[in-house]
Length: 244
Image (cartoon, rainbow, N blue to C red):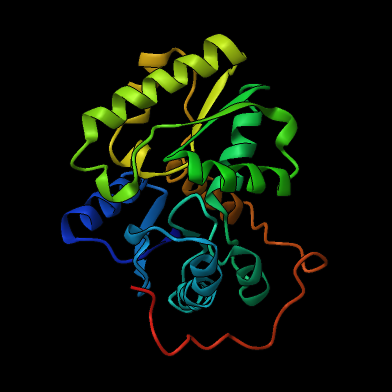
């Protein structure tokens, strides 16, 4: 049995259960998905300063996953929190959700439509895509116009906006695959199979995709390159105050 740890921050109880349930749905007879927690509140939106502060928390969680016998680990969300440093700390694969989604999308189409929560978060999407060297695949960027904290109360509005944005990217920009860069859009509040039927192209989301990639790499006994991420001899200590 391959065990994949999924690291989740702090959310209101109903929202936390939604995310845990979605992650566990990607378990199978061969793969067990377990949940680890960090004392962060992504529900309050993470801006650049908070993103940098979040890394040590996630890196400690990656170390805890290895200690508990997990074979790979994935952080929640499309910000790929703590991944770069985490790969130098542990010997199990650390999979970045957005990075994984980009590469899986490249196997099923040449032109991606990337949809973030808001126009403000699209800036981060552009930067991350460029840093991963995948910008040439992106046909266009869009957003659903809904902040994370509003999504549960404005679910139908978000769904309608997301579908409209997807169709525009497909019809006007030639997108062949849609990537929801924001897991609360899909798969937390929309089923990716249902969404794919609505818009007519594949949807690669950032929970199931990285979990299955993590399991595959663990099964193949592939780890991050120690040429690219030399092994660190110390685990960073968590800052004194959690981000809440």
